[in-house]
Amino acid sequence: MERQIPKNVRQIGNVSDSPKIYVEDYVDTFFAQLSEKSEKAKAPIGAFLVGDIQSGDDEDYVYIYGAIQMHELKMSGNEYVIDENTWKHAYEDCKQFFEDGEMLGWFVAHPGVPLTPDSSTIKLHKKSFPKKNTVFIMKDPIEKDETYYVHKMNDLMAIGGHYTYYEKNPCMQNYMIASRKKNGAVSPETVEDRAAQDFRDLVRKRGERQKRRKAGGLMYVTSACLVLILIVMGVSMVNSFDRMKSVQSTLEALADTSDTVETRETSGSVTAVTSEEQTGDGQTSDDQENQSDDGQASDDQSVQDAQSSEGQTDGTGTDSSDGNTAAEENDASTVDESGQASLSASENGSNGVYIVEEGDTLAIISRKMYGDVTHVDAICRMNGITDGNLIYVGQKLLLP
Image 1 (cartoon, rainbow, N blue to C red):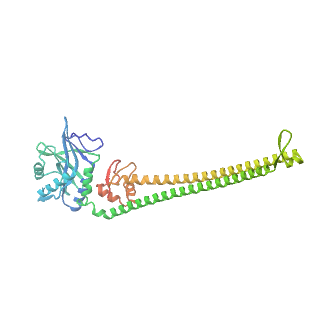
Image 2: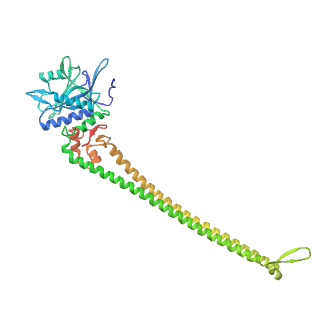
Image 3: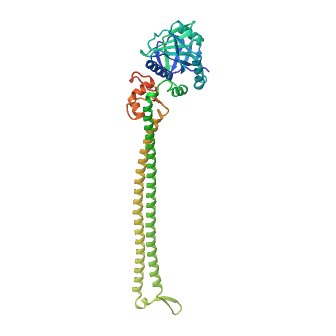
C-alpha cells in the first residue's frame, strides 16, 4: 500500500539527496537511548531498522518507523559481526511488534569510532541488506553526531540529511515499553516509578473521597427537603384542623339558634316566630344578623390566618431549599471541575507517553506527572534529550 508523504515533519541537514529518508520520532528517540547506553558501556550497540521503501515517478522514499535492538553486536578485531542468533531474535521481535514491517538496514552506536564505514562494514551491509536504498546509520554517542548512508550504485553513499516525522506509532511505542529493561532505561528509574505509582494512587483515593463527599451532600439536601415537606404538611394539617373547628363552632351556634324556633297557627297562614319576637322583632333580627356576621368574620379570619401561615412557611421552605440546592450545585460544580483537570492531566501521559502542550517545560511536565520537578533529568535520559530547553509542541515524551 502506498504511503502518503508525512506533513508534520522536521528537517535535519540537507535533504536534497535521493532517496528521501523519513524517520519516525519514536525511532529517533530510541536511537538516542541506545547511544546513551553505548556511551556508558563503552561498547558498540546495534539495531535493525524496520520500515518500507517506496518508489515514485521522480523520487524514491524510505520510511523508517521501527527499530529492533540487536541481541548482540560482536566485534572481530575492528569488524562488526552479526551472528545467526542475533538474526533469529531480530526476526522474532519484528514478527511480534512489526508484523508487516521489513528490515531494511541497521544502526550502530560506537563511541570513539569515525563515522565512515570501512570496507568490512560495507561488505557486511551488502551481504545482509543487498536491496537498493537500504540504510546504514552510524552515531557517535560522545559527540552526538550521526551520518546516514544508503546502498546505491553498489556502494554505501552518505546522505546529507533526512526528515523526522510525527504520527501515531503504537508498534514502536509498545516495543520501547517492552524492551526498557533490555536497553537499560529502567533500573535507575525504579524508585521514581514507584513514586509515580504512589502519586497516582493518592490522586485516585482523593477522587473517591470527593465522590463520597458529593454523595453525602446530596443525601443531606434530600433529607432536609423531606423534613421541610413534612413540616409544611404538618402546619397545613394544623391550619386545616383550626378551620374545621371554626366551621364546626359556627354550625353549632346556628343549630342552637334553630332550636328556639316555634310555630303557631294563624288565620290562613303559618308564620315561624321565636321567643325573642314576642319581646321585640327588631331586636331579635339585629341580634341574629350580628351573630351571623360574627361567625362569618371569625371563619374568614381563621382562613386568612391559615393562608398567611402557609405562605410564610412555603416561603421559608422554598428559600431554604433553594439555598441548599444552590450550595450543593456549587459544590458539585467544584468537584466536577476538579475531577476533569486530573483526567486531562492523567489522559495525557496515562499510557506512559506524554505529548508536549503549549507552554510546557520539562519542569512543568515533571510537576504535572509526579508533583515535583525532580524528574526532569529522568525524562531527559528516557528521551535522549541533551538540552532541556529544546522541546516543542506535539513532541512525544516517554515517561519514566
